[in-house]
Picture 1 (spheres, rainbow, N blue to C red):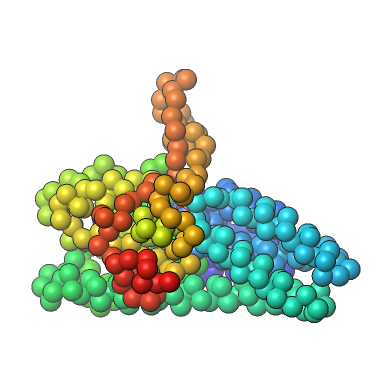
Picture 2: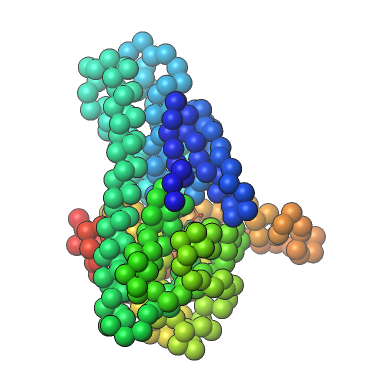
Length: 344
Ligand code: MRU
């Protein structure tokens, strides 16, 4: 799937993921404020995809004004970086991409401002390309892992939660990239896609991608995962990640940890697929990860209609933490590892 994050003629053009699966619409962003807003409102979402988007947003920031010298550019770009970084707190890819952009800005202060801007655009494009290349490798390593699980016998039934596909990464995907690569090797019989309340990334986006690819799938509600595992219908689970702490705990879409606990109970191997950019070696444990709290409306309103009595209270943490002990392996572009220490 192409055209998810495109940069052309000083505009960042994003596929508006809020409109999928029924409408293909694009949103044009002209500056860093519009980019931060698009990330916050989830026009684009998924950890690697928001990292790439923020990198382009940073470049747009450098084009917003005339700067007489490097010093004035640097002061302005500090504010641009902070604005983009605060758009969503949990996925570390945002911080990772903005750190790289900040490094590029500062690496050669003697250059004319226009040359620094060119370097920033080149860096943003490199981030996009390198994430795509990482996804493809993750897919191949993951498919080889699936080969071991299937052991030359039956094709696999695979469960995934949320959307960790091309839409979430700018191309190919992490968890869904593994499924795609494994399907291409003839290893996947069917995918069980959790709907992923409250924003329904599974129902809307994962099903959209699987349908486009011609991969057989079944949509299930979040509460059904344990039931299908108990009946021996799920051979393996693969999910993406928003941030992986040094001790191996994983922040991913709310509901992931319940799937992992059920998978552990029923002896179903549970994998996390993520590029190295999602590992936060400065974050000691899952407990140190900031979990984004989103609007209560997302829980209380479905299809623009309230579903609970007036005054009903709720909470809406967008992510949860899956303990390392529940994870069979981390599928990365450097291979399938059991510990984050193998990646440092
Ligand atoms: O709130 P979202 O839709 O940005 O959450 C996305 C997820 O939790 C994904 O599973 C994660 O970012 C991995 S994407 C490759």
